[in-house]
Amino acid sequence: MDVSIGAVAILFTLSLGAAFILFRFLQSTAGINKKEYQMGGAAAGFLIIYGMLHYSYSSIAKSAADTAKQQLSACQADLNNEEAEVAVKGTVVPAIPDAEVVYATKTVSLGEDGIFHFSARKRDLKSSDPPAIYVTTEQNHVHLQLDPDEDLGDLKIPAPKEGR
Figure 1 (cartoon, rainbow, N blue to C red):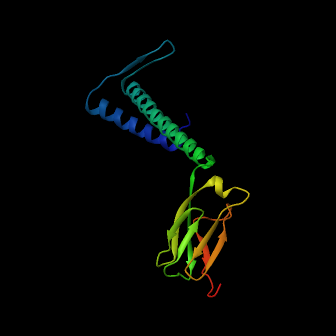
Figure 2: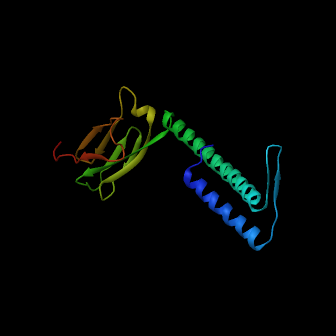
């Protein structure tokens, strides 16, 4: 497990503080007996506390990393899903009162500010004949052929000219 120097410094400081309080003020005792070495007193207490904190921190960090990996996998799966919906949003400039914005079989009313939004399937946008968006009024219409490489969250559609 990769532990940053900042985390080690914090764990060291917390362990040192805890050992100081336990052994200076609370008169605690501790001992570690291994074949290779023996340790007692505040040094053993420090090592035990540091080990417990390091184990706890490592477990929490591993859990957070696993969660982040799962979220990343889910996001990558969504990006690759051809059936996933893609948000399409744009503005008709200047705004036209009572105009409709049509995408394939979806129709949305154009707001007074000229902004519209709806969702589309990725598969449709990446086809060899991508769909178009139509802005229609009773007298005329204008259309925009969608390009999947374009920023579909900020389309600009010029208003239809009078008499078209």
